[in-house]
Image 1: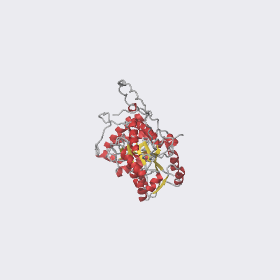
Image 2 (image 1 turned 135 degrees about the vertical axis):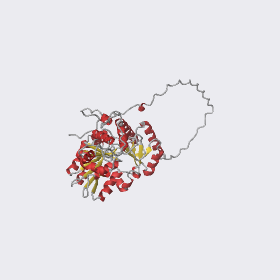
Image 3 (image 1 turned 90 degrees about the vertical axis):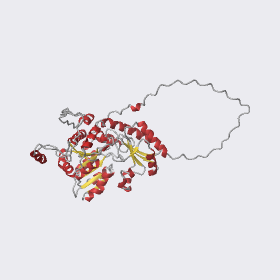
Image 4 (image 1 turned 120 degrees about the horizontal axis):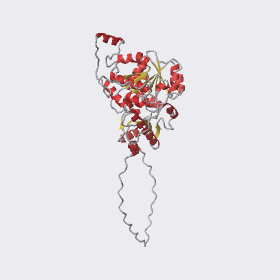
Length: 457
C-alpha cells in the first residue's frame, strides 16, 4: 500500500510526482492502470449498499475508476481545490461545468475572449435552452460591472485568453460576480496550476484541457473540472455520471505520467517563449507581439501579479494579412502547423482560419484577431533552433528591397607607368583548432518557477 504523505504542505514538484498516489496489494512503483469497464461485489447486499452510497466501492468506470481517482486527487492537490472530476476532453469539462449548474431562465455573463468552441457554447448552445448569454470585453471592468448589475447564475472567463493573451483581473471580476450571485468558472489552460491558481483569486471552478501541458506530448485527450467538494459531489458528479463524458482510464494514466515532468518542461518552455517574443518584436515583418510578461503588453503588471511566468504561448501579427501569414507558416521547417498547444513540439496556428473561424469576422475584429494573427505554442526544442527557423520563414516573406537609380560608373584608365604590385608572401598553415564546445544552451535549464501568486489580503 502507498505510504501516507507527510502531514505538511508539499511543493508543486513533489505533488506532481506523489499526489494522489494509490497502490494495490501488489505494491507497484508506477501507478496501476485499471483497464476495466466494471467491478464486482462480494454480495448482492454490497452492490445495493454501493448504489445507495452507504458503502464506498467502485461501480462502473463511467462513474469512477482507481486510475482516474489518482489523477483527480493529484490535480486537486496541485490546484488547491477540494475536489476534481475528469472528463474525456477539455471541451467536455467546460460543457459539464456549465450545463450541470444552469437551467432554463438563467443568465450567463462571459468574457468575449474565449476559445472558439467555448464561445459557441455561450453564443449558440445556451440560448437554445432558454439561457440568456451576455458577452463583455474581459479587460473592461466597467463592462463587467454593468453586466453583473443584475442577478447572474454563472460567469465564464479565461486568462490569459486564447489566442490574444488578454489578462483579466481575476479578483475584481470574481468580487463582482459573487455580488451578483454567480458561480465563476475560470479556464486556466494557458497558465496551468504552476503559473496561476484562479481559486486563490476567488474563482469557484477551474477547468482544464489536460491534452495541453498536462500530457504535453501530443498523445491523449482529457479534461478536468475542479472546485468545492459539495458542488462537485452534488452538482457536477450527477451530470457526469448520467451523461457519460468520462475519461478513459488509459488516458488518465498517460496524463498521470505526463504530470511527473510538468515542473521541468514548463519553465523551459516559458524561458524560450520569452526569448522568442523579444526576437519577434525586433523583426520589421511583425506588426505586433503579445506576451504577458513583456513590458509592452497592455496588462503586464496584472499578469505579473497573478502569474509566476509569462507562459508558453506567443501571439503576433505578420504584416501583409492572410497571404503573408500563410507564406510564413508554409516556410517553417521545424515548427509544425497545428491547432493544438502546450506540446513538447513547437506548434503554430492561424486562428482566423482554424480555432476562431466560426466566431465570424465581426467577432474576430472585436477580439483583435486579424488575418495576420498567428499563435505560437513554444515547445522544448533548443530556442536557438526555433529562432533560426522563425527567422528564415520571416526572411521568406520579407518585402523585396526597393530598386535604386544606378549612378553612372566611370573607370579611370590605369597609370601609364604603373608597376606590378609584389606578390603577397605565402601564409603559414593554420594550426588545427580544438573541437568546438557543445552549445551551452543544450545543457542550460531554466530556473525553477516561483510559486504561483496568491491574492493579496
